[in-house]
Image (cartoon, rainbow, N blue to C red; front, side, top):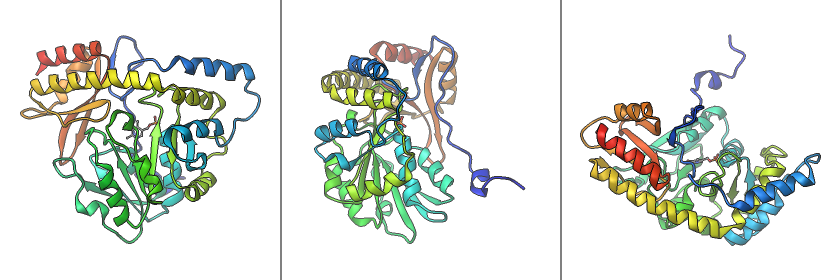
Length: 348
Ligand SMILES: *Cc1c(COP(=O)(O)O)cnc(C)c1O
C-alpha cells in the first residue's frame, strides 16, 4: 500500500539536464545563454531590494505585463506571468486536462510535456514528426477527450520550426487549445504571437531563461485571449512570481538593444557550430534555436558524449527510441564552441 496516487508511483519524473557542481566545465547541455544579462537587470533588482521585501509582490506582475504588452502588440490582460515557463506549462495543463483525458505531444520533443500529463493522471499521445521534422496529418486530428496539444516551436532537440501558417491551420483543425512553446522563438525567423488574436485556441508561452540569459531567475509568460487567462489565474499560485524576478524581468525585456546584439552573436556562432559539426560527419538539421542537434551517420554518439565529459565539456546526450541517439549542443561563445569542436575532431 502506498500513500501516493497511483499515477505518481508509476511515473518516472522529469530529469533536468545536469548542473555540474565543480568549476572548469564548458557547459553546453541546457541551452543557457553564454553572455551575462542586460546590466539593467542588476540595477532593477537593487532598486527592488531598496524598496524592501516585507510586502507581497503584485500577484499579476502588472509592471511586466504592461511592458510586454507594448513589445508584443497585445493588451496587458492577454499576458500571464509565471515562475519560469515550466510554471506556465503546469498551470495550463492543470487547468485544461483532467484525469483520464488526453494530451497530445510531438515526438521527439520536450520530455516535460509527458510528465505534466502523468501528474494529472491523464493519457498522453505522442505523435512522431516526419523524418524531415514536419508534422504529420495525425497531429491535428480531432479525438474524443483531447484537451490540450503541445508544440515546442522551435522544437527541442531538433531546433526546427513549424511555420506560423501551418500552426494556424493546425489550430483550426484541432478541437482543443494548442500551446505553442516558444522558449527559443527569439532565435528564430518567425513566431506565433500574432496568431493568438486570430484563434482563441492558440496560446504562446515564452521564457526569459534562454534569450534573456536569466535561467537562474525563473520567469516566463503566456500570451492567450483574456477569457482564457482569467481561468488560468484561478489555477496559479497567488504569488507565483516574486518581487525581485518581476523587477528583473521587466528591466530585461525593456532592453531590446541588448537582445538584438546578443541574438546576433549567438546566430553567428550557431552557423559556425552547424558547419563544423557537418564537416565532422554529423547530420545536423538547420537550427532556429540556440542549440544544434547532431546525429552521426555511421556511429552511435554515447561514447563521444562520455569522452567529452571526461574532458570537462558537457553536452546533452539524448536517446529517442525509434529516432536514434544524438548530441544536443548549446550555442556557447565562439571560444567554447571551438574548444568543443576541437575535442570532437580528435574523438570522432
Ligand atoms: C528551457 C525550456 C522551457 C523552460 O523554460 P523555463 O522558463 O526555464 O522554465 C520550456 N520549454 C522548452 C522547450 C525549453 O527548452
